[in-house]
Image (cartoon, rainbow, N blue to C red; front, side, top):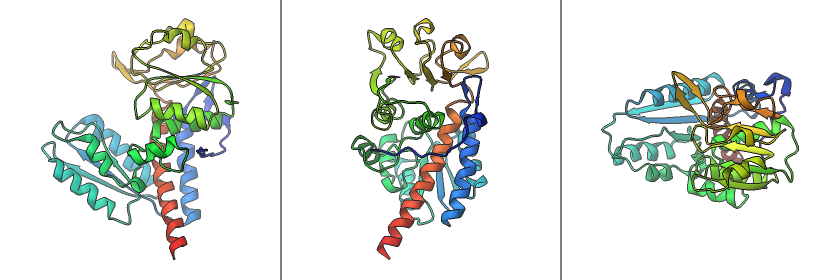
Length: 300
């Protein structure tokens, strides 16, 4: 069984009025990672590649670099112009694969149209995969073997575990089937959560019926108002992965203010899932560094 990391953080420190503030939990997790890193006497290295001038990507990479540096990681950001070729991008990945100071590699998406994103992601060594997007790590998750897990679903699972609710035998419904969130989320709920899992998507004909049966609802379809709020089950736990900019404000797939009175817990947007994704990127890099140290000790 895949083990979900436990940070043993009191719910009082990050939950407020049914709202699961991942932003608060992420700060506390980063503090734990800093302590663990010092205790293990390791200095994890995170390398991020940014291609082009996308402003949102710049901000996102900058926040990752800052978060890594604050907890004592070795942090590198490489920037290439939007005109960079497939070969130039691959050359950076190859260099980092061979660099012993780097434990986690992330390529900020989206990449320019002339770059084959899938080929670039698969060029990253599975042992240095920080995002959990490599097919080897995806396969390990399916086989319930140790490997790097995609950051967003891992972050959600950490929130559920830290929440301390009983998940065994519960009905979990995942809206969305992407390789980045939907599929790994369903697998984690199935194996680590011991849930009965239903995956719904844009072609599902009975989506609202499934929503009404969900003890745990994960909305990761990226479609605003895909769910009929009246169908959400009383006492359920709802996690909203969606992000939409509406009239200058960031909102999720759901309107949490409409359903907060009927659910047990719900993630707000913003401040819910997003910060946990970055925290898990750091955790994955830390874990890669730890595995490398253990392997070196075994071979010594």
